[in-house]
Length: 429
Image (cartoon, rainbow, N blue to C red; front, top):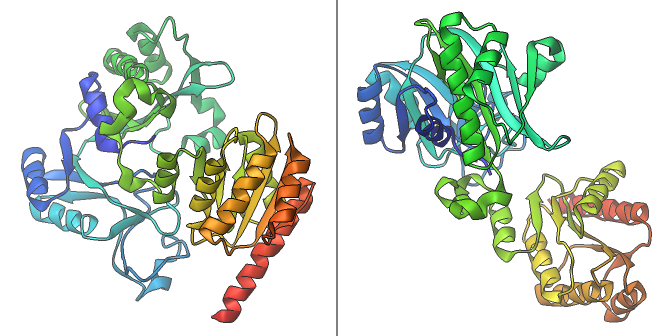
């Protein structure tokens, strides 16, 4: 689960990590107070769960218009479709009036930020972080993430901060330092000082940087985080170190230890269908950009299903692992989520019965088609436990369904059905 930058900095500050003075505002009154306290020169940052804010665009979209192309690449192409367009979700301002001029478009009703990471429709802006500007001498990169292969935290750092660490690793891999951390030993300040020296920080900044690294590791452990990233932290002109950016990802699997992370969660940044799927407890659901709705049991099979669809020229509308299915109502709820997605042109059900019973899945499919009045073409591939009974249930039901025994054949049927749906939609237009 992602949290906002202002929330990440609250965590940093509570753990002794130096951050610029500032806070989040949602109203002009709050903005004025923050500018008065931390100005006159401030940074204005739109708060969304996405990167690329600086190169993105603030847009105010007509409620009847959907955006299907990259606004950042060719913004003038959409003249007349969008109002209130402004470049950038990160702005510098000097003085109250200039700062408010940058603040207002971000907090207008229906304002959204479109960046390379948001998709074409962008995401709503939840708040605006207003903080004092920092005099920067040099930028650095620091992160802590989970090294799944070795089962331990991994610190990644570089003296080339303020840019994509993936790009730095591609162009200059020797500039990227990797430090495995024994979770029993932890990451004490003396190890942080060693890392600071390796990054080339001046001697006067080595001790405070080492303490900052150790405190960021405490954030990572205390919050059961999956990622703590500061890009960049900076050496200021005064010789101090400050985390001027911050990103924290929280591990959903540990949410039970933190009250579900509810105080940190912002549902406005989440896909409504994903929230609906979570509340229905149908399994792991992630919305994608395609038009073939997928209902699959098992994460590995779900990924293989999506790969096979793409191999045949199709695009999955979602990832859905419904897990072990031995109840019809679970199948019905899963299909309810899929059917309610307006992007779905075809539904592809791919079930392998190990612990799951294929006949119960088939009964759930039949009941769902009748109960939900499913109109989209339906492709079903069943295999495993009680498969013959499951196929008989589908055959005897009288519902319109295409079946196949092999994954490739079933995927091809689904792709063709989706393509036919697109052609029908265009001809109606």
